Figure 1: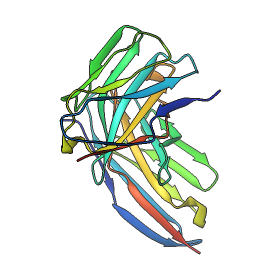
Figure 2 (figure 1 turned 90 degrees about the vertical axis):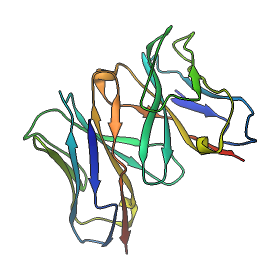
Figure 3 (figure 1 turned 180 degrees about the vertical axis):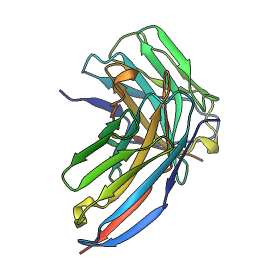
Figure 4 (figure 1 turned 90 degrees about the horizontal axis):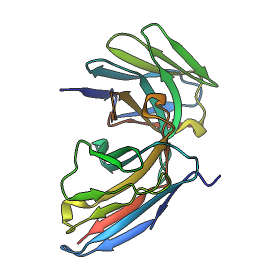
Length: 113
Length: 108
């Protein structure tokens, strides 16, 4: 199993550009989530999904969209990038959220100029 | 509002010098408390889950404990390879809230 994979590893955008961060898992996990990690602030939840076709907002959803058309994939879209979205983004999955143990991807480091 | 606070922010230890990391929380309806380890440039890696006050879990030099208001991660006789950021998180109905982490450095 590859676990949770994320692409790209690094990305530089200009303000106003849009892009999609890719996340895939091959463990047949129901629950998937996106976090951003900023210095001194820990991991903050952006969006999550409890199954294919079901998504919901987390703590900091503004400026981001998600969809979950398959169990395996959970892409995160930045609609119009802003410097405040400069961060490290992590995708995670778990069999069910009640199981608690989340498997994290390696992260995407995004810089918005 | 649910909060998770970790202390200290950073901790420097000599190899073999035992210590504890603290995670205090205020959350309604705690469904579980989790500890993760994060190495630089990598995603967090799961360590422990604790569900009820009084519960303890151990793994090598690490032991996690839980009370009604806080959790401790005890590190006994640490080695340089234990250097990492340790994150705690509380599980809510549909998501988890993380603390900011404690950055541990163990010097040989």
